Amino acid sequence: MDGMVNIPLDAMALGAEEAAGVMRALSNPSRLLILCQLVEAEKTVGEIEETLQLSQAYVSQQLARLREDGLVAATRDGRQMRYRLSDPRVTPVMMALYEGFCPKP
Image (tube, rainbow, N blue to C red; front, side, top):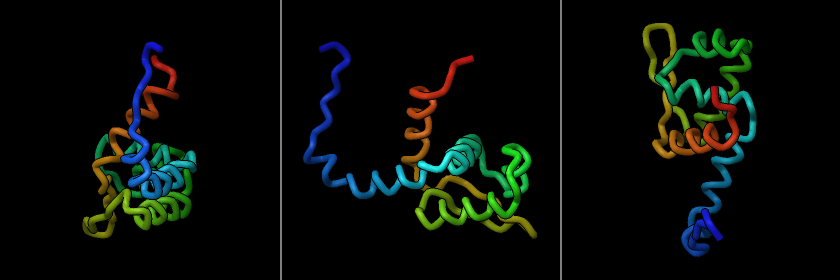
């Protein structure tokens, strides 16, 4: 069959629990969009809030969850927190999701 991909089951079994945890974090559409923003560059809560038209409290709550999951990290910049991706494996996952699910312009 053309396009068939072989994924070794024994290798997947070793990382399945961790991969499932990442997928749980990505299962919320708002968290997915927040991560899309952070793939581009680090951002403040206010920048994410403005771009996604979400409340500050909700963005902060979702960022806290992503921090707990180890996907983002924060750095204080004066009175603001700047968020960035902390797990380099997130970018290729986000790109694969974009390629598979997003309409092309």
